[in-house]
Amino acid sequence: MRKDNKDSLFMTAITISSILKATNFLTESLFFIKIITIENKRKINGFGTRVVKAKNITK
Image 1 (cartoon, helix red, strand yellow):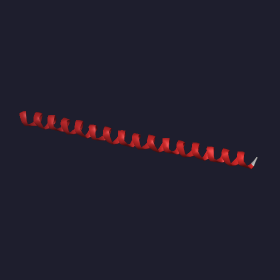
Image 2 (tube, helix red, strand yellow; image 1 turned 135 degrees about the vertical axis):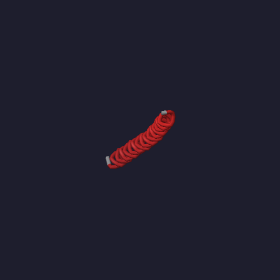
Image 3 (cartoon, helix red, strand yellow; image 1 turned 120 degrees about the horizontal axis):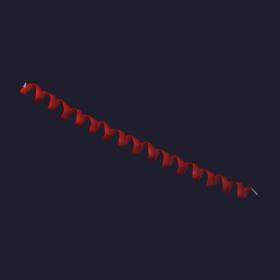
Image 4 (cartoon, one colour; image 1 turned 120 degrees about the vertical axis):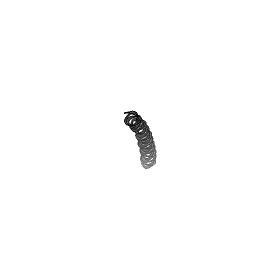
């Protein structure tokens, strides 16, 4: 009986650790995606401001 309990506790511990690892990986990947999107937005904004500056110069 006790041996079975130990095994089940060990299994639950493994499952919990694997779930935590999965969530950690998901949060890290989401953070990475956020950084990429922010950088892309900055590039677009920079391009937009350059276009506006060029228009101002031509006027």
